[in-house]
Length: 329
Length: 106
Image (cartoon, rainbow over all chains, first blue to last red; front, top):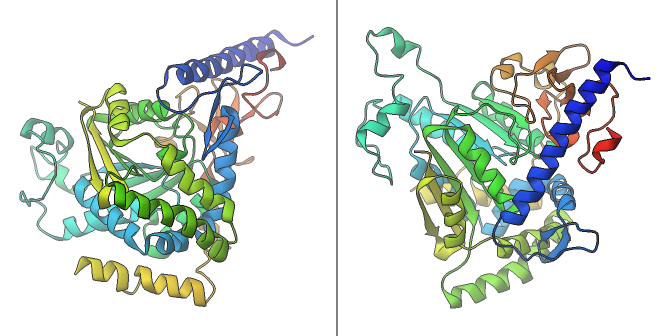
C-alpha cells in the first residue's frame, strides 16, 4: 500500500538506473580494444592486469589496490622510477603551460602531484611578468582561441583585473584513501585554499558541463573500466577551447629497451612492492595493467572519437610514458 | 639544474627514498583539526549530482549531500564528499544504490 508519491519516485529512480545500466552495457559493446570474453551468464568481461574478470568487479578490485598503496604511494613512485616520475610530471605541466586564473580539473589525482605542480607553476607565473608573451607552449593556438580563456583579463576598466579568477584545482578521485593523503599534503604545503577534493567516478563526474579550462588525468585512465566514457565526461566538463591532457604509461617503441623494461617491470617492481609496501599483488597489477592499455595510436584515435580536435601524443623516455592531448574546439 | 633539484633537493626523490627506507615513511595523519573535517559549502557551487547533473543540497545534520530531484543522498567523509553513484543511498528507503540490484527491487 505504498503512497502514490513513493511509487512515482521509485519509478523515476528505476528509469534512471535502468538507463545508467543500459548505457554502460551498450557502451562497453561499442568500445574498441581489450580482449573480450562473454561469460556464461551474459556478463561482459574486461581485463584486470592479465586476468579476465567481469566488468562490474573491476572498479572494486582497482579500489582495493589503491586503498592498499595509498600511504606508500609517493614512496613507491620514487622507488620504482628512481624519482624520474617527478621529471615526467614537471614536463607534463610545462607542456600544459597554464596561465594564472586557469581552472583545472585533475581526475584520478588523489595524492595531488599534478595539482600542486600546477599551482606552483601558476604562482611563479603570477610573480613574474604576467603579460609575458614569450611563454612556451607546445601548441600553436591561434590568437582568437587564446582569447577565449583569457577573456577575463580583457577589461573595459581596471576593475576586472583585481577580480580575475584565481587558479583553482578540483581534484577528483574514486578512492577515499588517496584523497585523504592528498588533502593532508595540501594542508601541509599550503594549497588548501586553491584546491578542493571530491570523491567521484571519472565515468560520471559530479561536475557541471563547460566549466574547466584544462582536464588532466595522470596515471589514472588505465585503471578505469570504460575509457570511452571517461573521455566523454572529460569533453563534457571542459569549456569550449579547453584542453584534455593525459599522462600515462605507454608502449615502448624500441625492442631492445622494451626487453630491458619488461625485465625490470616483471622482476624488480613486484619485489620492490613486497619489500617496501608489503604488497606484491598490487604492483603486479600495476605492471600488467600498463601492458593492457591501448597503444599510443589507438588511444589517440579514442580521443578523437570522443570529439577532441588536434589530438596528438608525445612519447617520453622511449615511450615508457606518453602525453596525449586534445582540444575541445 | 631542474633535474638535480627534483632528484637531490630537500624534498627530492633521493632523500624521500632514504627517509622512507631507513626511517618510517611520512605518514599523513588525520589531524584532529576540525577544519580538515568540515565540508566547505563553497563546493556546492561546483558540484552536481553525478546522475541527474542537478545542484545538490547540503544537509548539516546528517552531513550529507542530497539530490532532491531523484531522492538520493551522498555521504561526506572527512570533509570530502563521496559522489560516486555506486556509493549513494536512496533517501526514502535508506538502502544502498547498487547497480547490481535488478530494477524491480528498487
